[in-house]
Image (tube, rainbow, N blue to C red):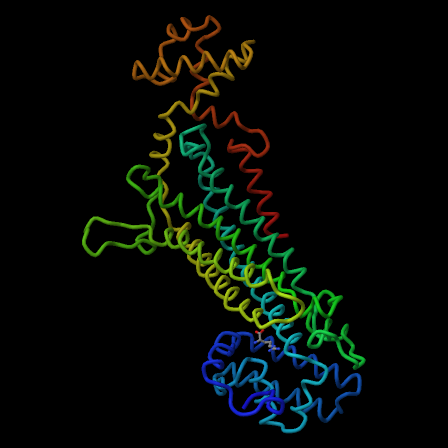
Length: 457
Ligand code: ARG
């Protein structure tokens, strides 16, 4: 039997019921729903709408329901429409009349907004912990590779030498911003909508600030229509998740590349790799591929909700029920991805020799050669052209800038001296780049220190 029995007659058609029901997915908000109801009832008692006896019975009843759901003693009645109706009906079944008073001055419209805000506040907190673990792992592995020279790429072409530490710390920076974005988003999640009623508030003299404090919200919402009709806090969460998983996906793509025989910069631990059913030699980076692959799913959730919202008149419309599966799936997805990423990275074996060898091929020191000439008074644009010609000469002769004889250098320009070999030495090229934010080991050490501080903040 439905809540609205009175206005409507007879049983709901099963086909509508199937479409309409949200309990199968909103049941995961049972804790928030019950906590919210407890605060609401406490406030109703405080303003004299409920007697202390009624208030007491409601608190006890709700507490029991919560603990029985936690222990598994009570299971969800899958006939119920949603988590809100389930809890209210269960309470009334247990305590009778006072249970029927719980919903005074409240609508499921403000209730569902409250529950979802509480749920997202809780979940983003949990996510932050996983994110911290991932960032800490990037930092930890980076610290071991301050001196590991590798090619830095632009256009996926070898460009200038960097270190593995610097490369990994780039991801630590991205994830730190993801952490900050989530925190900022949580500020707006924590606006308390209860008291907005169905759309137009209520005539009861509710103490909204009391509920706000009880539930740990930051402020009460300002406009009842907005509070029940808006879901941009969910969109923001989904945007944060989309950006975050996009970062994981970029890293995952690099892991896939680096695992290939063409690169072989890294080998994953056997526990974090998979094999083939037919090719006996295979060791595949499925985990990284899945991190990359799951990204589309999170973007899909963001698109689902953006699209659901775009044409909605104020205030609440049932379309809004589509917010939950989208954001729950995105949260679950990002959570499993983050949890798998840290141990995969931690247990991976990097091959500094292979990286160094790759950096030695491809003239990554050509810019440094030009800089050497600039140091000898030649304008950069000229130095650039001379270096380019020397690279071409090396390509023709099958040599590198390190092995090209000094006589050839001097034929190109008299400013060249023995010191040119120091200038093009790869390790020197990296060590020289000690500008703040650069790849030199001493600069990356500072970066790591700052990232650790940011992580603690
Ligand atoms: N299950 C609904 C949702 O998720 C709860 C709010 C229902 N409100 C209503 N007026 N039917 O949005």
